[in-house]
Image: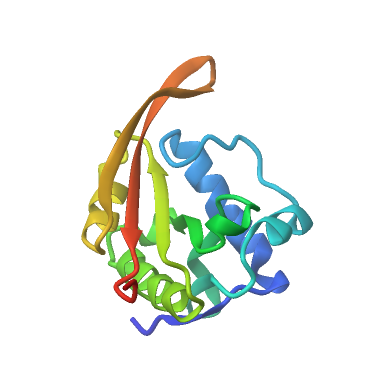
Length: 163
């Protein structure tokens, strides 16, 4: 299986959105309930750190970064999103995507990557921990989804390039 990795383009967005929809449907991937338009998605995500995994011309996964704040002091802190098509989960695509996203973030000078993950999403927690993320917090009843209060774990990874 020869998977290609490259930057996400507007032409990829229909497939990216479909994979995001699959994540929404699990109920354990995101608080989002609707897929944003390309324009909204594009403006929210950092231009340089957005990667797709492609197999046979099909997007099978994606990863991207969102700034956590517009305040200058937090310019190097980003939140990570990573999603794998339901047909390709368990094949280590997430590992490869996350490796590439971390490498790209390091080149771009980001010093902290963070992720908010539902405690029930053990596969995502393991994936992040295997790549140097550590649990730094537990956010109890941080948001409601379908009328139910949900908790998240806050994970973060510091750049190895920090002095």
